[in-house]
Amino acid sequence: MLTVEPASAGARLDRWLSEQLPELSRARLQMLIRDGLVRVDGAALKAAHRLRGTERIEVEIPPPPDETLAPEAVPLSVIYEDDHVLVVDKPAGTVVHPGAGRSIGTLAAAILAHAPTTAGVGGPRRPGIVHRLDKDTSGLLVVAKTSAAYDDLVEQLAARTVTRRYLAVVHGRVRANEGVVDAPIGRHPTDRVKMAIRPAGRGKRAVTRYRVLERFAHFTVLEARLETGRTHQIRVHLASLAHPVVGDDVYGQPRSRAPVELDGYALHAATLAFLHPSLRKVVEFTAPVPERIERLLSHLRREG
Image (cartoon, rainbow, N blue to C red):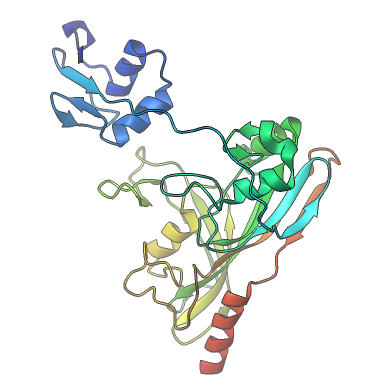
């Protein structure tokens, strides 16, 4: 139990805690606050809450997760590989790395088995993984096989020079042939497993460009290009236009039901381009449209 001194009145909760508990990073403290494990006079508050002084603060610190990751010999769809990078086509239904509720059967474990040298690259449970895809989204991911390649690719992502284009089938007829959604995304204010468009200052800038590839009576096929890489970005942005991704029952229910069995979202990371960390030239890769989305498109074309 910690007690706030009157002299600390006006301090942000997370900053005050980082001074009191220097062994924990500020990011870790913010996560504890977000998960309701920090209570101010018995109440769970936000990280930006301003203290008034004299409060009593209780911090519950759960044991750290097991940082070991066992390799699993699961087949990978390898699009490209050399001594520096690995490009894979992730199927829908596969989790990228271990997290809440999923410790085995991850893409990370399969990568570790395929390329053991990635064990020391990036985080111990994210070997060489520099970006991710949602479980029910398929498509291309680049994995760094060396620390130098990892640092280089992370910098490219931060500089927004990595090109990522997605194929998306959405509900409704999108009227404009092309458009852009520039709206900040942050954690949903009441549902902690969801993201949402947030007011300025409460979310991170997120930009998605899209163009129409094909229209049907009640559906549209889009190409979506990420300029930023926020969690659930394409799904949140397209849902904000009243055109949720087919199969996405998180942001599009109840309209998001697919007209055929889909086994995931109608969202596929089809194109990936970046500056190769060693060759120093731009390389571009494409992943074929998976059978599950082809089945949906065939149905829509038959129906007109």
